[in-house]
Amino acid sequence: MYFKKIQVLKVESVNDEYFVLRIRDKELTQNIKPGQFFQIKDPCAVFPLLPRPFSVYEVEGDKLSFLIKKVGESTKHLSLLKEGHIIQLLGPLGNGFPLVSNKKVLIASGGIGYAPMTYLEQKLKEAGNEVWFYHGGRSSNDVFCEDVQNCTEDGSCGHVGLVTEHIEKCFDSIYIDVAYACGPEAMLKVLVGICAERNIPVYVSLERVMACGVGACYGCVIKIKENDSIVYKKVCKDGPVFDGAKVIWDE
Ligand code: FES
Image 1 (tube, rainbow, N blue to C red):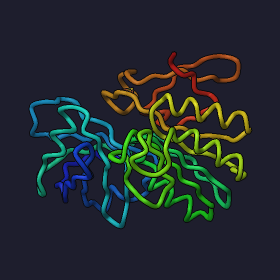
Image 2: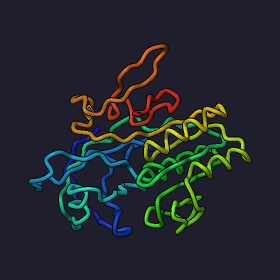
Image 3: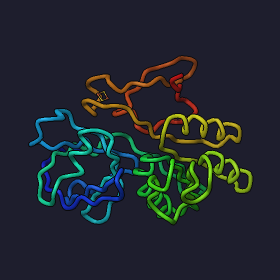
Image 4: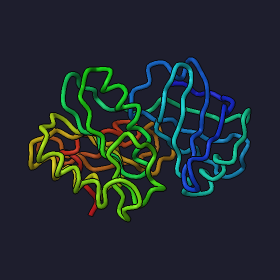
């Protein structure tokens, strides 16, 4: 884990809701696992005081990027940074996705849950897996790549309907060994149910509001089934990736 101040290489707008923040650093790009994240902030900004967690999007040589959705002042501020601006990064943090090899694998993402999945797809393919990648969003604004099975609720891009509906059809025609998912909890909960019916193990990456990002503040706890009891786990330190079958979802 590193704590560094680094220059912004580029901020690229994807559309009015999303952007990609790019940096370059040899140390940071070594040994990053798909699904890990960094706490990022602009040390010169008076507000917000706390850094925000962002999943690693792409890793290429010494270049590292983050796909970010503008959801508040903090992300809006980052979207306006120029090349050469200094930002502060802490990471890589979290456990990341456990990788399998030579299997048939499903990747499912929803909205900004797409961010950690392209690097995961790359690593799974390098390990000899066959990958089916389904991504869902409300509209074409939430679609980032044409090379995956895109599903939009309004039908403006790809298949019409919820991504989980299309994944169910995929499961009916293809045998899948293991699934990986990141997205809204409602989507993850449905997907975990679909996987349970078919005995498919599924790893889910969860999002929580984080303060410290390193397990010190207990601000990101979730409930997990462990043996016959319920235990509290920290999304930042014990996760963000958990066995979907063990997660107790909020009502
Ligand atoms: Fe502080 Fe997870 S964010 S314990």
